[in-house]
Length: 239
Length: 239
DNA sequence: ACCTGAACACCGTTCAAGT
DNA sequence: ACCTGAACACCGTTCAAGT
Image (cartoon, rainbow over all chains, first blue to last red; front, side, top):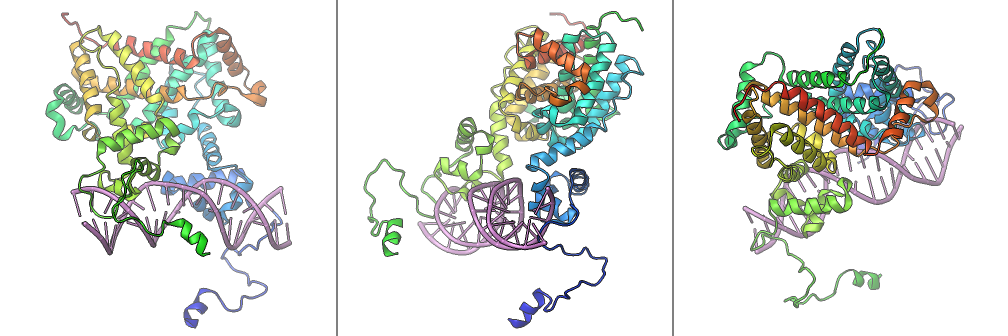
């Protein structure tokens, strides 16, 4: 018993710790300089998600990767949802809105929508958060909306329809982001195949036809229909 | 101490319990007739979701509402995700596909899509589950796909495009289901309003204009664009 | 086969104590 | 103000024991 107990902790810790590459163990109490901030938390969360996925993003794991106790995080965020919000806003800044203002409207929408889908298809657990997210709490997300709205206005879109069109496009983008993550054989009816002959035939026919990823073919089909439909709403514009 | 201990449990339980309206406490061991099945679990889960929302749907709460221990559930489902799958398949049967085969294609798609959105807008936590769900495990969901596929084929849709069109419509429906749940002031930029003038103007303009719910206006706009765009893919058909 | 009851390995979050 | 450490009230899931 004594032997195993001794192994748990060094018997005489040095009063002044020797210089070491190991992170010095922090004593309780306020550190002289804050070790955490929202940017650092965001970066660590993204790193964790990239390595372990969203199941690996726990407050404990996040704290560990930052070298602090879990409770320390709550000095900088109100909840885990706040962390997800920080991540979401970071990702919104990566969505490509550069074509609005430089390219024709349809080209700009196409580039924006594909980029938006690609970014969030790797982060679908954020979608429920975004959908309910007041934009006031997400400045980079808001900046994205501003760029897109300006693009629609300059393209001659009637102002009262701009938000509705963006909301509809965004709904399609989010739904399509989930579809990207679906398993390839999601439409395999298995033993029930003979009970759904039309469906099975259509699935087989698509598989025989396609070269591109089915999820990309579907996204392209829907996006082009939306662009065509919404393009007809535009009023005559000079340039 | 003796007093409090006595209060925890009746000191002498009757060997044969007297008839009572209280549910008789089950002893350990296999009951003579199974008390659980998948239908009962599904019904109890729906009831729980309806009363307490998805946060209230825990394996413990589900077991309690069924009068069993939580571990008993695992004789009938493999995991909590299996429970969500049972609920999803039940809801799929409530989606209105009745217009396929009796009404024109565009009317049928319109009725299906609105119904699909309405059903799942109250059950958005299922959407991540459906998106990755192999249809072989969800017979009622599969039956819905069969009805829609047959409707598209009979309307003269080229077979190799049917699945892509359905996937695109479904993506839009799922994204729109989230939008229904969004708070009304989701687009209020707050103190950042002056930094996003185009966006703020468009949001204000929409608010001044609309009578219907903004989420319904956006859904209608997108759905009609998709119906128009996809309708053009149809080949000439006799009836 | 199908139940109970105890246990396991987690969660997110709170809060007193320390500097 | 910003950290540690202990504690709280949960989770979903496993498994031996019982009939």
